[in-house]
Image (cartoon, rainbow, N blue to C red):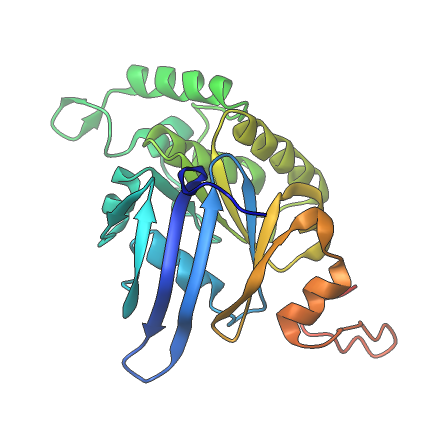
Length: 264
């Protein structure tokens, strides 16, 4: 189905990333995302999906290729540059300061200081409450990050990105550290963000979750794109074949499936 170019908030064209040791993490990858969709980027460990998203977030520089955000060709030389273009990323390993409160973490580096190095705590707390309510992300602004559960830490990371102006949110394996209940809660929150016009890129290899939450998916294998598909029109078996080149079934008796295998 054809789409208008104006629908695309991100276009990555011909992205190649070759490291100094000669390893090609991405090979002429095309990747595009529509405004207001939840788009899965799928593949086994080592497929090149995280490298592609690090390039989109300015953490890595492509060897070749171009990136277009909201119709404008951009050079994303750092995460600050990506954030300036409305791109935020929540990493698998959270980037929070455990000794600080939720509110302090959320506004670190962006709110006016009362004097010197001291954070304006009142403003930080107000801002956190305002955005937590707006985005339906329940957090306790006054709690120390060291004392809160993993699911709330992830919400803090998402709020950090949103407060900094992210309209395109990259989530790297977001359910890897969550309980089943926390995962269900996260999915409700992501749908809420989508309904408000935000665009979410969801890096994953979990087929059942992808079928639940995403509109479209891009599959990667061996550093290359294996195509873009409407989530509703492709089966888990077909996704599996595209990801790994074969069907992978867990041998329950021998438990021989590795963590990166796709279990159908």
